[in-house]
Length: 566
Image (cartoon, rainbow, N blue to C red; front, side, top):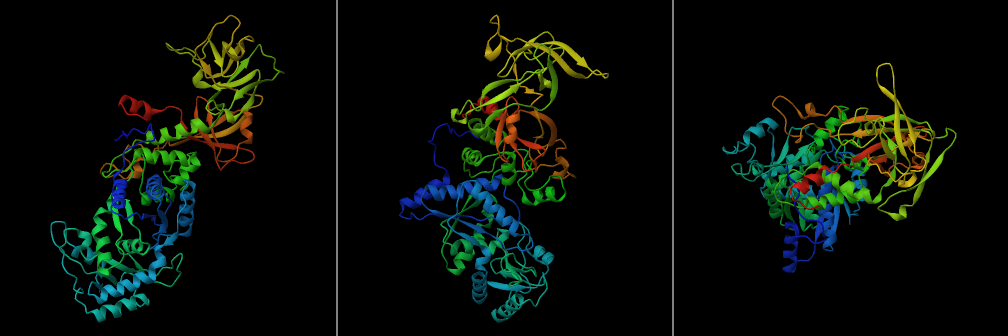
């Protein structure tokens, strides 16, 4: 596990290696900066993509350049307009706006023409081998591959076959177009990579115009070149693809875009594979791509994360050249830090136990003036009703208190937040011995932190008056995966075997009445409980709140122990 050790307590920090590369280019007189964010629209973006978005758009902004949004839509079998729309929404929500919107499918005609050019140069050929025959023919890392029996077809035959592929004459998988490079190349991806395959499938933008589609390794570099991208920034797993990227550009003699790789984002207890996330959705392990337990941007948004917190997280993680694992606690620290400044305070009792204040008039209601956010005076104030029956949290009462327990217990006093001191006089239990009610008395002279004789108590607990309380569903989320590394599984098991069965617990809670006017997406700090946001499942008859994060800051404690500055 890696804890980020960069000091971000000030606005000053050292340059990352991408900034150093750009500064060096500028020093040499090349000041034009063009980046792009190129997702494939085959799923919803996750927190790892958010880091890439922040890097690509952030560099363009810092150096006065441009960042395009380009959809690498070369596989119509897996892609959909739904994903295109969600990606655009996520990028906008994170606070970025692209210079131009492009699609790899915009370049299908040009890519086809360039394929023809490579065939004419003797650099590409049509292969009739099966997928298995191609796999076996590539050899191994230690053993060179073998030439396809169709590798030496004439230019004329290849042109004819490729045209017939385009015309729909052949079935899926019957033929492919391969680049002719080197079947003994030490990089196995350079052993005659596939450029085109046959897919008789309509495309979400081009319809039925094409039945052959370019492979990513063929389309990506040329797409960058067409857009004259100066810095093609991708994650480290694409480092081995770099020779193919440059080979096509060099053979075609087109604009020389340059590829640079940074470490992908890995977070503890978090899955970053779109393919595996799709399995969670399809197997109903989660309620959809925006289930708040998912690491997708739309799920984080629904859970109550803010764009500022995610951008702050990306900044703190930094840009590295080597893969590492970031503790989930850092992401939680970032949202906690942001919501502490923004979220209004409210009281909510998630595990309620009834308290009757026997010496408070049952017909009386008292209003307490409460500040909405001690970190933000402009947040204003509200009035919270108090009556003779209230609810407190079960964890705030102990019949036989342990040492240094400062909350409510028989014969002991505690202060109600914003309100009075109360003393527990009687504990009411049901037939099974379960505590169902507490009888207490209050000190009328103890309002607003005072008492009749100047005594003080250490314990302060939250509460909600029963007479005015609103019931609500409160969703408490935990890590979706039990293992710290969601990709690390025992032999014979899959990542699905490590799904946390208690990743979602729903409680019926009592909340203060001011929350009735909340809007979907509004965030609050439920005092002494955590940060919560109103979910879209809310109806006129029932409020639903998602816990964004608890109040306990485990990462800050861990970082402090390690001597790391936040």
